[in-house]
Picture 1: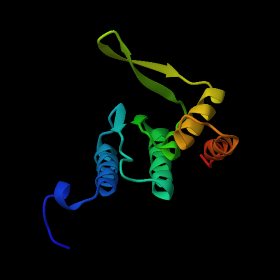
Picture 2: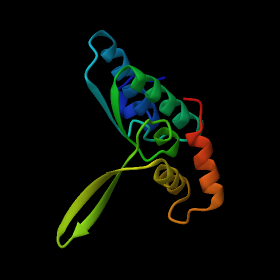
Picture 3: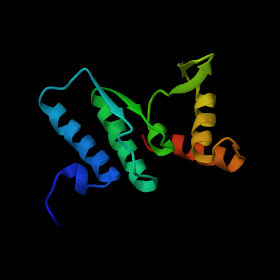
Length: 134
């Protein structure tokens, strides 16, 4: 492999996993009060996203973590789920944040899987993700 700057030779998924590993190692000596991960799962999906979600969940048992994600595999590993939505009011773009109940969380994971047309299959898959071994 040719050596070079990591941002030039690594894929988005490799960069995301590198950042996760780096934060875990750096927090081992002097843990921060909160770790924030903004789309650390970028460029990954499926089994890799599930593994990232599981690692973040384990980290969350030791310290407070806040994870921003578009991945249902990652989101399903959290203890709490906040939904952030952007909307336009006049000429301003605003955002809102709301905590989700268990039922709302199931619907949101299903929406993340299926898009706006949520099917029973998507709800079933969401339920399986939420039921995962945590």
